[in-house]
Length: 462
Ligand code: ARG
Image (cartoon, rainbow, N blue to C red; front, side, top):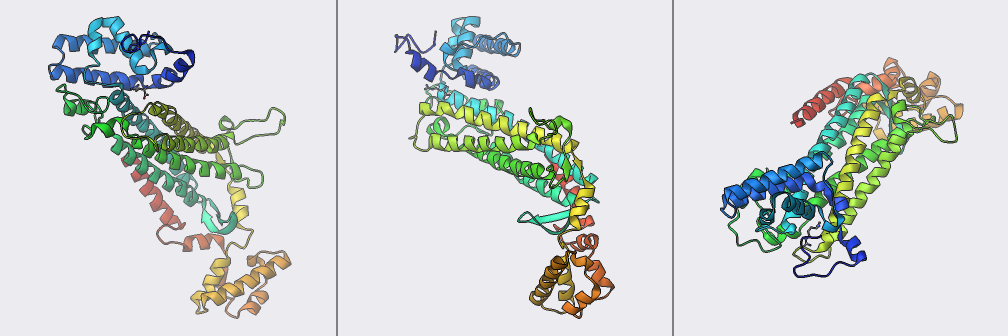
């Protein structure tokens, strides 16, 4: 039994059409939002005098019973009833009788589903933000604990300059900060009420659009009924924010994969976030990071699906839009599970300070500092760069580090390359502490960055 059939279209649906048509397997996830939206709509109808107080009460309590049935797993979803909206409405009529049929007065599934989706995004958006906050908190905790761990900073994945692990971890956190802003911003724009827009051209009933919007926690009613029912850019914005976030998590995942390789050996994941191989008994694989990388592809796929879904739709609802749900649901699922798993993996991982230290000492990481040493003494930087470049080549030929070259070789390369301050130029620890500009890796700067990060993430926990 479907609600709409039997009126205009008395014949049953073809099997293939029924399969194509039904969406309840997917959109039943909207049930909390659908019930919330319907209760607000019913109350609005009551306030407008379209429903009597008693009718409103009957419908609202019927919807609350349905909520309980679903929560307790007693609700039977029926594919023949097409979607979440008709399943809930049909059950309402079963529970409260024909008065249940008055709920849909002045409403279409077009404004109903648009409302449900906005409520859904707000709900899952809050979940995603909470998970984001937890991941960022875990990263900042680790940054604080590893304040004294030095490591190379890389460019082109080649050892570049001495830095500290906490500085690197805080770089991860900076991405998440912006991700938070983007998601919040998208959610803010999505927070408007389509209810009252009807199928496309509003309703002749005196609906209380403002009051319904307020009851649902929306900023206000959407200002154009055609736009309200047929536009899904809010989903695209949210999926964009989640895609960029997912891409960032994927980058972090990529570093975790690298760092937990024997070749890098900077990090050991806890067993709780690793898996083994069905064949090779020695394996401990960083699957958490690889899966997070993989999930980011799905999120980006969702964004693409949403963009393509709407690109050729003329104004006014088109049934194509039924296909907007899986992508956004999937994007939220993938983002949230990735955030939670990464938070756990990062909090429980071991950073191999010894390996990071060893990496710091090989690869002439203080070459820039030696060039800077000469530049400070008046040698044009370009010339200094050239001199030190030649010294690095010489060190490589001798199979030693720049810091291990005999003083005679240094002075031969440039007469100013001597003295106790040169020692400090060649010392990675001193090199890190010298980089004390805003945004740099020197300890006081990183301590300040940790404090600023703490303040930011604390303020975001609302
Ligand atoms: N299941 C539909 C969707 O998700 C609900 C709206 C259907 N509207 C319609 N006119 N058939 O978009």
